[in-house]
Image 1 (tube, rainbow, N blue to C red):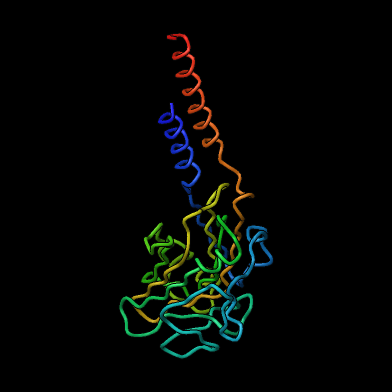
Image 2 (cartoon, rainbow, N blue to C red):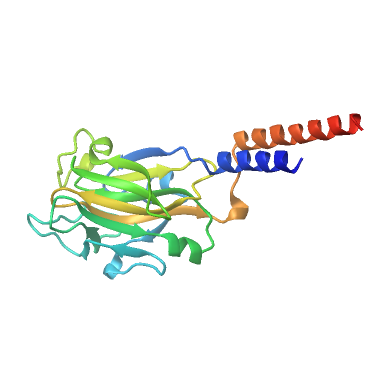
Length: 231
């Protein structure tokens, strides 16, 4: 009977931690506070004075406060303005990794519901990877999939300066821990990373989770009843 119970709980856990991601991109100027899609999010990293909150660790690249011709461009009309972050030479394969695991732990968050960032001058040679706590890739978003109509790196066009939102669904993601920005040419610039996260007590299980738990409990009762009948 104990093995049936363990199996039922395992199925429920797998269902509750699975994440279906929805990616949406909204034209600039940065719509962080003007679009309801981002209303539940807190602007966690705005690079004001090139600072980051406690628990957020950034590796690679550099914070900048103005454009440098041929090297990087300040994201067009970002929400906070001022500082932003960019990949740096040498190229190709220049990366920036932003680790939120310490920040999530410091704030006792167990699940990320959604996150967004302002992606400047989107190019086809850029990619954004979502990482778990071990640095493994959860999913990849390419510049060509979020620009409109094309990822040509235009530095002052709404369709290539967009807030990109990743929604993890009703139960959120308990595995998300960081972002990796990769560019094969100069440069991948971004600003104002906003996150909606909750503690464990606030996470609402998906209907499929309840169904699996109910099936597991039904199996347990069935086994117990047969054992009783068999004496």
